[in-house]
Length: 146
Image (cartoon, rainbow, N blue to C red; front, side):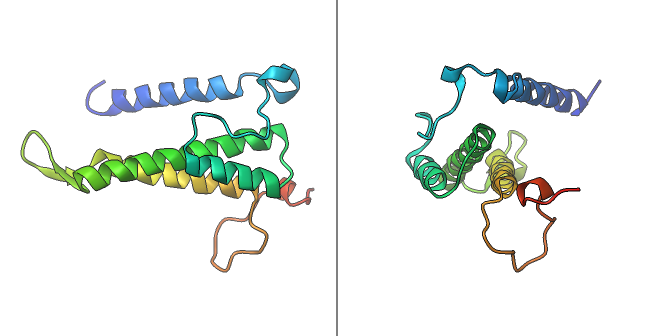
């Protein structure tokens, strides 16, 4: 394997291991101490802790919803970190060959923002139908079904 193919496989393998670590046991097999509670995790930023608290206070959250909320908050924190790096270094950088390129943090920022938006949409926190067109919400969260 040459070029970027090996790199993509490595990222995929790392992502899959990370996903497996978060989803290895179903919620009903979790021990009481392993479950997330209504308090925001300590590693979140102050802004994400405030978002966590406001969301948990306004919506009824099951344990699997809290895991999704955690992913949303972590994505928002990652986006904020990438944004601060871009503010420090600029959107464009010059690589070792003198070529001007987009800062790698721009991709991290884009991906983290998309992940946060998708997880928040998955949680179905919107109370009103959106004005713009977007993929439909999941039926099971809206009380519908087949």
